[in-house]
Image (tube, rainbow, N blue to C red; front, side, top):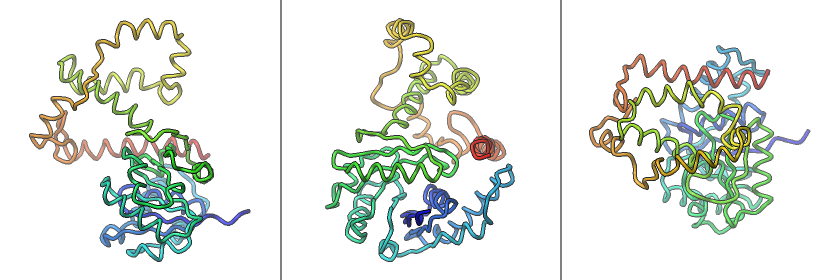
Amino acid sequence: MSTPEKITIVGAGLMGHGIAQIFALHGHLVRLVDSNEDVLNIAKDRVRDNLTNMANQGVVFDESFDVILDRIQISADLAPACEDPDFVIEAVYENLELKQQIFSDLDRLCPSKTILCSNTSVMSITEIASKSENRERIVGTHFWNPPYLIPLVEVVRTEESADWCAEATFDLLARVGKKPVHVYKDVPGFVGNRLQHALWREAFAIIDEGICDPATVDEVIRNGFGLRLPILGPVETADMVGLDLTIAIHDYILPHINADPIPSTTLKEKVDAGELGFKSGSGFQVWSEEEIAQSRQRLANYLIGIFAGQHD
């Protein structure tokens, strides 16, 4: 059996600690770097909490939590973490200038063999890599939150990304239990977020137009076509019902579907009023602290159940 690759993760916050968990769970030595020591110092505790929650929902681990956590080394200093990694995954917040600076530093500090990856969810990988010299070794790896439970990772190539770089990244992700997909063009939002936000735009437009209330939008999705999405994506569904029927429906309905290039009126009004959703207690709907906690736990339980079923 080959020696597991060494992984460095830059950013220990919302996504970074969860990505570290994935690799540590599969036997990789992980260096987790963050300049914010408050975030860094609780990162391993957050991983332990994730593992505990999973175990409480029936996920069985082959090793103790201590063994898994011992594979994660934390550091506030980037340079030592760049001495010999096979892969670096950047997971800092979505600020283009910050990401460009980090990749310029990584390109300078890391050995030539090291593959450099960005976890941005929407930003251009080409722009992120633009300040670096060795751009052929830079790709996007868009994990979804929470990364240790959601299988998908979008491997995004730029025109300058080398085939060997994208293929090695894809292979690594598959070996740690993810479901990587190749994205051959570096476009805003890649694949997943373009699809997701196209749905959100229409959902918000339906609210803007008074067709139904916000709760009904979610009920229609949860109890309608959303039930089949884990089994049948839109392309397979179209083939199943027939492309002749699909084009007939599209000829009729597409002129009536929202195509605005700007955000929803209601969405903008809510933000301007400070109604931001869970973080303020109200958004499209009003949320109590108990309802917020229940929503988060319901999602976690659902995702853990899927994870457990896939790893029985």
